[in-house]
Image 1 (tube, helix red, strand yellow):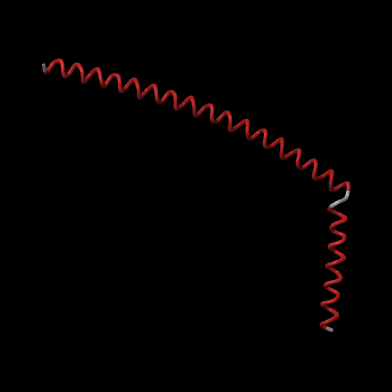
Image 2: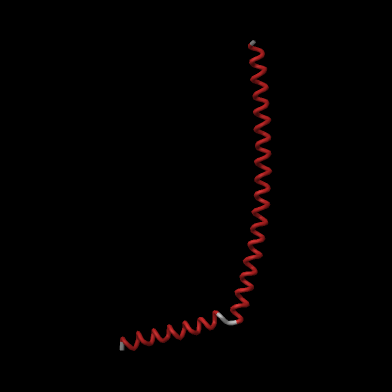
Length: 88
């Protein structure tokens, strides 16, 4: 009986596999794959747009931070020059 059970499981697996391949290659499945791929591409475009906007914002922030640091550095240099002139 054990041999028949294994044989039945094997035959069921082959049958299910064949049916699965027919199902996966059907026209309805193909339409589903196309719609899912199109949705994925739309999502990719949306994500890339958001990433580009975020990169632009980060570049603006970095540029502003550099301006602040340059202003502070210039003010510090002016203070050091004034202090050295007073000491002399």
